[in-house]
Length: 227
Ligand code: BG6
Ligand code: MG
Image (cartoon, rainbow, N blue to C red; front, side):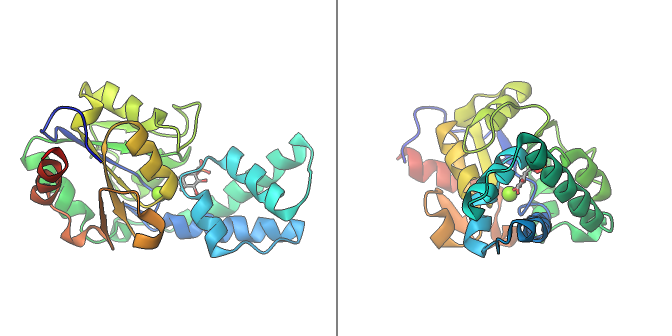
């Protein structure tokens, strides 16, 4: 995909769950437990469709897959119990749980005066980054409490760019979710997908994880896209 203007990367926006820490797995486990109450066995393909999606939208999607029509109150109750389970799973998180390559990459970006932001759909993002001792790492944190629309809507990334005072075209997003890649593209940002090519085919670059992701690779990508 060709981007319109600026060839410089000025900021990198990191998704949290599944990019910085493997909490995508915890969301899945918690939803799986709750979905069983509707006699629905959540599949891993369902989970791909839930990644990056807000808690409220996720519970509605699961109800639709399960073929149930719960009241608004029951939806809220399930979502709230899912969150309790999720937070129990997160309780043991430590800085050792930061995924491979992430800290090196953040350090490289900072040394090169590239701004770093967190752009997460999660309302628990601040809690999780505190557990990881990354709460003083990001120039800007935009999370599920700051946005009205969940990914694939680009709001979370556009808000992060605005708060950093950089143009969207100068931002690179790192995501593990199809919905997050779509959000980045809608925001006119470079999209790097971490995970499987089959899930993230729309990304500008797909890598299995962050271990080989460097600033120079992102710059190369920019040049390729602009040429
Ligand atoms: C996203 C996750 O980061 O946050 C989704 O990928 C999750 O799975 C969403 O539903 C909302 O998270 P939370 O913590 O507010 O329930
Ligand atoms: Mg994610």
